[in-house]
Image (tube, rainbow, N blue to C red; front, side):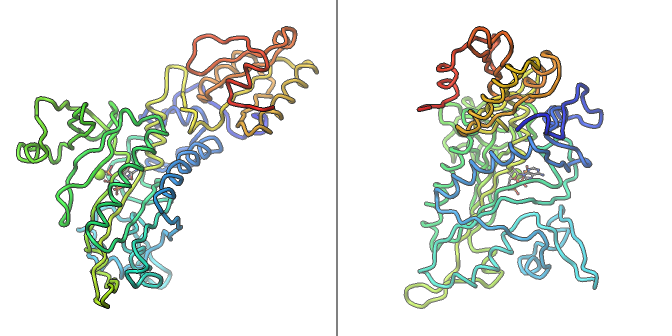
Length: 419
Ligand code: ATP
Ligand code: MG
């Protein structure tokens, strides 16, 4: 994309109405726009990042047999009454609305009920199972406090997967598969090393749920980390009895602040039974379905990555999520320079490399400052100087110095082969 065509621009001032570092940076860089507390719009570059994170999650969910759907945000009240989750005393962060005729509706905050309720249309027999259904979509929650930027929104993007298994054993096998898939997601996002599978409180059907917690000084959660075992315990279940049960020694645990970037939960047959959804087994007997639900906070992850991968000059995106791989800077407006920069832009684009082409008439210092603030992995300069030396100037966002590279080295560094 040419920056001359991008409608957003960077800002030198830190937004006054925002305290969270992740949102400050993303607003300054023009990735997001704050509508109100806990509600953000995603602008072209921000939308790209959100898409890249979603795509990694999607690939990993597809790899374990997930079927992607797109459920509705508006929810009929009756299915939530059947599971006893409609009452504001039971679920306190609902947004609700009404039809013109007064009929009450819920504004989707999670989707166990609608997905389960839809199931019997397609799944009736043991032969149709197990099934794994997920979506990546907007959730609405009337959060009491929304002060952590993208990390706690009132409107936010979540991946939620629901599994329906025939037996507890079948459920547990899939549950472990999801846990592994989640770690692959966090690895690909560059936060695997700081992310711990964490024992957290469960429900009626299981003693624990598993959270995936990424260490961060701005985290809202307190966890106790066992570094060598690569597990952690959430403060909410941190008791002597539970530690003994988990065979964890208190002296080997370290208290840390962390952000919950995902969680997985065994639900037993609670919701399916309440909605009268069963399957018939090999003997024609009616059986309960064993359910699990599995969430990943996509927009929360974007906030976390912005917070985590940044320095005093701005964002420093990992390559897998960056809105582009290369920030191509054209310095000066001599016809030869324009020609070479244009050609390079076309060539990289043709090789499937995402390029932000700074073709604006601005000073070098301003362009470099933008390249840093936007956090694009590579800055590539075409100028009079590079033209006369038959080379390019390349600098990784994380490097301190730029270096002169020839064509071959440039293509190699950017992972372009066979051209
Ligand atoms: P939390 O404990 O942070 O309030 P939760 O336990 O209610 O979250 P779930 O309902 O299981 O979360 O949602 C799945 C995932 O969605 C969470 O692990 C988190 O990453 C993300 N998430 C939850 N609430 C928010 C929010 N208000 N803003 C952004 N992401 C959220
Ligand atoms: Mg939680």
